[in-house]
Image (cartoon, rainbow, N blue to C red; front, side, top):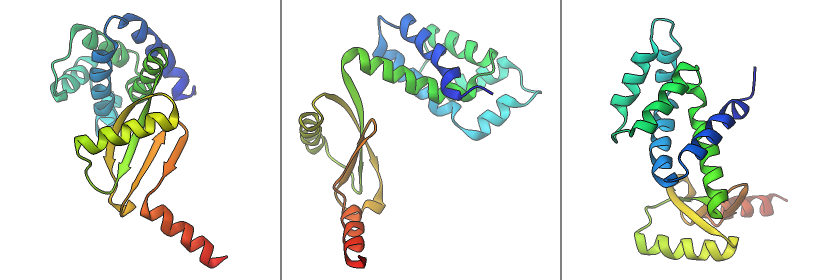
Length: 176
């Protein structure tokens, strides 16, 4: 069986070319569809031989919080009809990578033990952009087990200034 990334690539590239006029809007609805399609119960329903492609399409469309544009509906129908709904999260990831490559930016996920207000996030984003030398699309995810501080993931790079990481370093140093 082909790797999921291999399956997702042609879909991501085709959508990238088709949505060239409004990549940001396409990224929004694609991320939402990917989140919905990533649900194991939905995938189980979609894989059922009793479920028709129309039923799967209607279910996903009804779950979506935003009104899907015609391009999104056509894309979703194509993915469902070809039996590639499980690849939707990877399609979204590859689409975002293509979009970022065109704009010269990267996605950055800031993991924090506590909520970060807008001004603090803007300051962190500015510092991170200087540190990594590129424009970053910053998102925040709460991770209480960090205790304090933040952990930042940009592509394959990780910057960990959390208290949890410092405690782990102290543990290693004390046990050595």
